[in-house]
Amino acid sequence: MTIKNLFHAYALLVCFVAAIILLITLALSFGAITDYLFPEIKHASTVRSFESNDKYINAKEREANPNDKETPTLRQLPAAQVDQKRTADKANFLQDTKDKAVEELMRYLHWIVIAAGFFFLHWKLYKRNVVDTKDLK
Image (cartoon, rainbow, N blue to C red; front, side, top):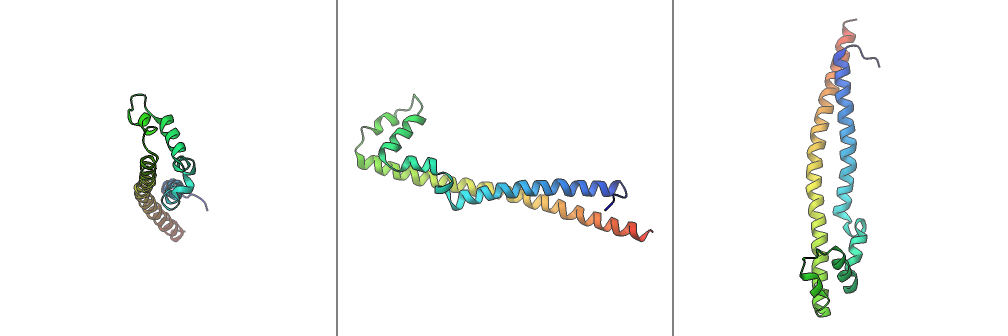
């Protein structure tokens, strides 16, 4: 395959850039898909902080803002209330992770559609121009 003219170079360059964008976006999409399908596995280190009340309270204290008044009171709450709050926070964390994954997938889908459109349009232009230059010989 030889590049016959400037149009060939342009079409192939656009195809190359579009292919790179497609590869990167597809790789990022797989990350978002695993976030959606397996949030407990992919974010296991965070999910582990919800395993027990002590782990939950310790994690909250580590990430707490010094001005936060809620975290110090967690140790003073009855175990049943801490357990209920921990379970609710875990469910919220997993749901937030899934929601963010859907948002990312939608954003990546836009990139995939646009890059694929550019790729196929310029590939067709390149192929048509190659055929046209062969007919001239």
